[in-house]
Length: 518
Image (tube, rainbow, N blue to C red; front, top):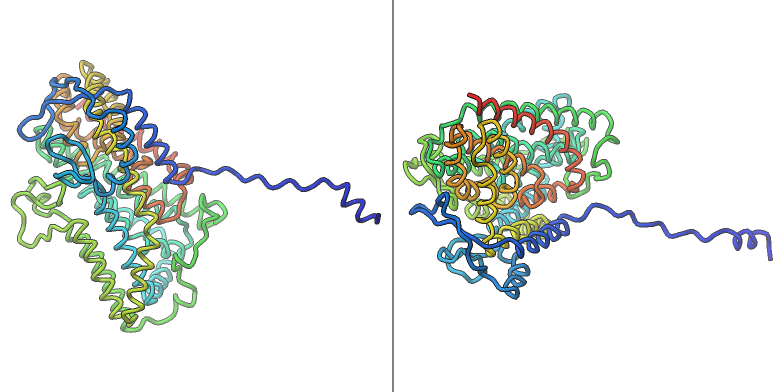
């Protein structure tokens, strides 16, 4: 035996490298949460409040009811919950959500198709090469002023979040902002901060949004303008904290990319990051026309979904269609996700024609975009499965009744603190949007009269704490879809958000306590 063979024989065999266990995939995490909520619902008794003529629960009327589902139906409820999260219909008589019920759409199929339409449109746009050149020129112009762009875009998205609960619509901006932020030397997390975190932080200080404050104020029996001063203070302080926090992180990443929380998530060909040569390559007339069409599309998106009559005339808005109920202006479009999805598909075809992609090239790009965006889109109905389970088991009113018992009969300061705490589980289970406001305000608002605080503080507190929770809520469909589009793991996002969440919580509680003392 040779010496080399002897050494080889004596050398211990290399152990296979152990695979590092990472954070669960978003779908796996949602699956765990859905299963946990389903198990919990088996032990929570069913109950309901009596409703007034407007469909609001009446305080003090809660009573236990027989469980609407047997165990076999409970299992079916679990298995069908993601399906119902996509296109489930809620029966107005029984309140049950099912795929073949008659009533209002409960599922998130509108958001699902909206994401696919965005993918189709943006893929066609990038196929022309015009937007990469445009982003390259913009990056060159802001090369030394990237912070200005972060501030301006964060304020814009934050203001939209405050005025009209800008959330679903923000998903369309990821394909634009990711290559731009990379070109400026930032990372994916900065893009998430600007596109998703900013509007959610803006919603903490919702001012006159008809979808949150409008519906909540109406259910509480007050005007949408009541408490607006406190909400403006919340908006200014929270947005200032968010922007300063993002700028600090962005400067750190720009100075040393290795310090990025997503340093391993390098740009790939799907991100369409412009090269240095593209920053100086001249734009042709066709390129400028395509860029103009893209700008027009996103301006039309923003203008068309704003319920101008509701905001300017202080009237109600339909939470389903987002149209002004009364006193709508003649020039309002009143569009929502179905119309926006159609708009993106139509504009994809228009851009394909202008970009001379031909019918084969345009169709292929549309299909590729739909396929690429299917992953983020699928997350939406799965995230909504929790609401389906709790709705079909009639356990939401039981939880609401328990929360009612916690906050009643306390001093104004203690009442405010307890309400902030109570808003978190309620925000998790029923949300802090239009549906959550309509469900909880008729119960919680009258308690303000006993707690010695103004009813507007109830609306403001529930909205602020719910919006704060939405920043890290794993069943927040828009958040997890945005992270999927940005290719940012949820655990990295939580690491980024943890200090900011603490800062925002201190600001919110301080402002609310001052408001309770006034």
